[in-house]
Length: 86
Length: 157
Image (cartoon, rainbow over all chains, first blue to last red; front, top):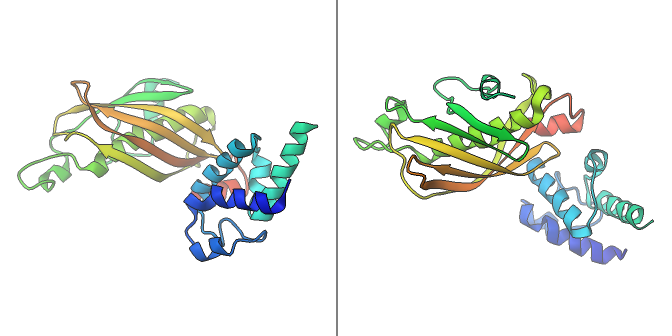
């Protein structure tokens, strides 16, 4: 999984839901979905469902609770993809 | 779960209960009715001498039947007084006016119910069977029994 490419893909997914353009423009691995991008918790569910669709993976409650920033999202995507392909 | 059981679990009362009966409910959706009493207070002012049901009230009827009644049905026994309900988004088109004494039917189809968020496609029809509003409504419905810690907190925001 290419890191830069995944960050770009995640940016496209979160774009419709962000409330802080500055944090979005300067998005890094450490960017927090709720605290930095100001995505509300109801829309965070849509972000996660869009991630499921994009990568054809299923995210469970436990993974959902860990998915607080870009880095955690990338780790979860990578784990779920490798589980699927193993 | 029967229609009466669902309605008895609704967290609303007069003058803000907008559900008369639930005609059917299943895993994928719900259908219910409400008749607008001509004495409802808002008709006195919306509009002056020309009572028409406000769009916000039509939205509320759609949310109470389409989202909350469906949520109660889906959560079943895990729905209780500690369950938190919050409307999170609505996107509704209003196609025809609804006047006092009209009976409307709300038909809601579940889009998804994941991580405590219920999203539905909702249609309201009048007695002629004409669509008066259509749209999408979403809310968070979380039972403490189902989600502990952060999940429960999300429901209260």
